[in-house]
Image 1 (tube, helix red, strand yellow):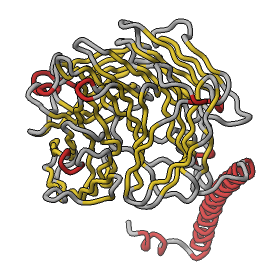
Image 2: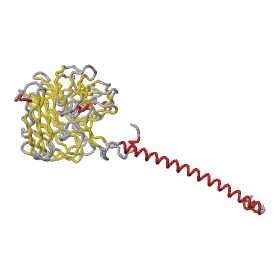
Image 3: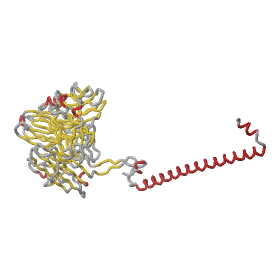
Image 4: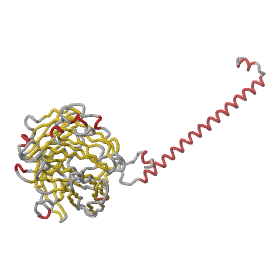
Length: 511
C-alpha cells in the first residue's frame, strides 16, 4: 500500500502521534551521528597533539649545531686491505695531529695476531712479508683513523717479475672501477676480492673493451666468503668474465656487489721481464677529470678513456706540463664511442715531460694511462683534487721518490712534509703556477740517505690555493735498467658528512 494512503487512513490524533514518533527517531539518529563524529574528531585531535609533542621532543633533543644541510664529523673508524699474496713491503702512515688518540692494527685477514700496531698520531711502520701469505686487513679506531694511508710495494731486480710495483691498500666498498690492459696485452690479470665482514659477499663483474661491452653471466654472483680473499683470473676462469674477455687489448672493469662489500685490487703481469704492476682504482665516471702523474722520459705513454653510457662522448683534451697547458695538435678533441675503451698515444704530446691530462666531456667518462719506460711499466688513473680537509698521504716512499703536482685551473701552494720513525723534515712549500705541473723530489727525513727504508709524506694545500692533483713516482736505476711505479694520490678521508634529521619523520622512528 502507498504510504501516503496509509497515513490518510489514520485519524488526526493517531497521525500526530506517528509524526512525533518519526521526529523522535530522527533526533535519536542525529544524536548518535554527532556523538560518533565527535569521537572521531577527538581521536584525530589527540593524535595531532601526540605527534606535535613527539616532534617537539625530537626538536629539543637535537644537538644545537645541527642544520638543514647536515654537518661534518671527523672519521673515527677505518678499514683498509693490502692484497698480500705476492709478498713485499707493507707501509702505514697516520696523519700527524696533536692531542689525538686511537689505535691502528694490521693483521692477516683470515685471522691471527697483529703484525704491526700504532697508538700515536703521526706514527708509521713498515714490514716485509713473504710470498704466499694471506691478504692483510688494517683496522683503525678513534681519531687515528682519520687520514690513515697504507701501501704495498714490491721490488725485483731480475726475473719475470722484475720491476717496481705499488698498490694503495683498498677500502671495502660496493662499487669500484679499474682501467688498464686486457688479456691480449698482458700475460696474466688477477682480480683480488677481499671480504672483511662476517657475512658472505656476492660480486658482479662487467667490463668494456675497445670492441664494446663484455657483459656476460659468467661474471655474475661470484661468492667471497667472510674473512677471505678470492683471486679471480680475468680471461682465465668462468667467474673472470669467461672467454669473452680474452680478445680485449684494453679493459675498463667494474666491480659491484649485490650483497655485502669487498676490497678490490687488480694485479697485472705484463710479460717476460716487464714485471708486474697493480692498477689504481679509478673514480666513478664524471664529465670533468684530471689524470695526474704521467711520467716523463722515453717510452710509450697511452691515454685510456672509457664511456660507460649509451651515447658517444665528445672530449676536449689538454696536456699540462711544466711549460703550461695546451691542446695537442690533432688531439684537442677526442670522439669516444659509447660502451668502449679508447686508447690514444700521448708520448708525442708530452715530449718526454712529466705532466697531467685534463679531460672535459659532454657525458661521464672513466680515464687513466699506461706507460712504459726502461724495463718496467706503470699505470695511472684520474684523481679528485687534494684539499686542507683531504690532504694527500703516501706511506711507502723509498729509493728515488718524487711528486708530480698539477694545478689545472688556478695557482696553488702545497706544504710537503716527510716523516719516519726518527722524526719529520721541515715542511717544504711547493708553488704550482696556474695551468702547470711541477715535479719535485722527496727528501728523506732528517737528511738521511736514500735507501730501502720506507718513509711517509703528507701534502697539504695552503689556504686559498687552487685545485691540486698529485701522484707519486717511485724509481730506481737508469736507462734500460730503469724501474718505476706511479701511485695516484687520493684525498685522505679525514671528515665524513652526516645528514641532518631536522624536520624529518625519521627522527621519530627508533634506529
